[in-house]
Image (cartoon, rainbow, N blue to C red):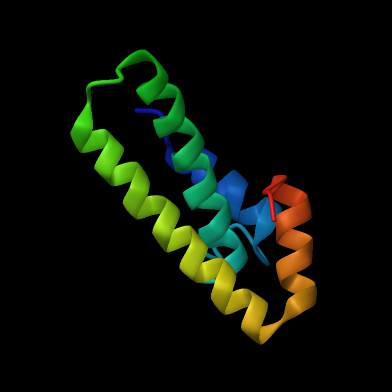
Amino acid sequence: MYLTAEKKEELFSQYGKSNKDTGSAESQISLFSYRINHLTEHLKKNHKDFATQRALIKLVGKRRALLDYLKRKDIERYRSIIKALNLRK
């Protein structure tokens, strides 16, 4: 599997408050971004996999909603996560 428990803990510790911080917006956005990158690479090889394409679109929507929430609540945290993950906008 591409996403192990160790990889999740690494993402949470890098972008969240601790390695057990699974609920903060930053840690969830980083996890969604990792999954989006993985699915994008998969779709480059398997362009007719429409179930994965739908899952990717749903993930992008979830990440966008969290980013919008973070932008409304704390603009500095929003700017820092955008810069850390190299997201456009």
